[in-house]
Image (cartoon, rainbow, N blue to C red; front, side, top):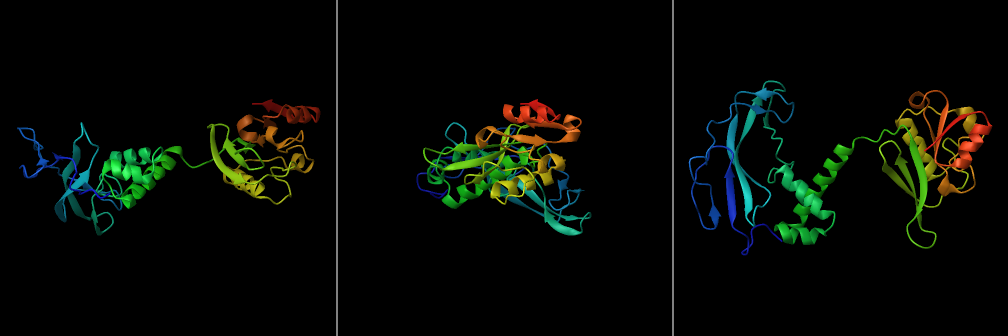
Length: 277
């Protein structure tokens, strides 16, 4: 559903910078002495290099959709500059932190739409917020990108690997988790071998994913222990029970970390320091 429909709600414009004040049709604008900002802005930040510029190349009046309030659809009217940036030597539009990458919407409205998409279909969100389906999809992508930015780049120091069943039968996933942050990193489709090792020689998707994660996180692995079969994900024969990761600098010395009591006992018998999570 498009934004501009015959049954659209009344619209209110909020003025963050100087602009004309009048009423037209179903559009209502603020009234009173505080409808305009006391002083216009004097600087703008270049969106390319981040340099703060005191002069502008040109300006234009823009409008962005904001969160609705009490059934009213709010739009923000603001003055946006283009600056001839002395830092990078080009003409670029100014950067506004509260504006989404799609300049027709504010950042908080984009996050609001993305949050709705977690529990509703895109079509339902489009009908609720009077947006086009493609617009909802674009805003949900911005929401997911923001969630990834807040979560940070996966750099686990201790990883956990477990197999979970999706439903009855043999449909399962191998989930690799960051034990320190307590969140999943990736999921591998298929059932792994019960003798899968962290740095073993068996070729599988799970083993490749684990090696890539350990390499990205600069995790130090005791190669003799791996070759001897001590550092395995399944020490007791049941893959769903075994999780072992190793990182000497963080734990101090040659310390192994495991969910599996059998694996911890095996390491203790071999004279290795073990810690149960």
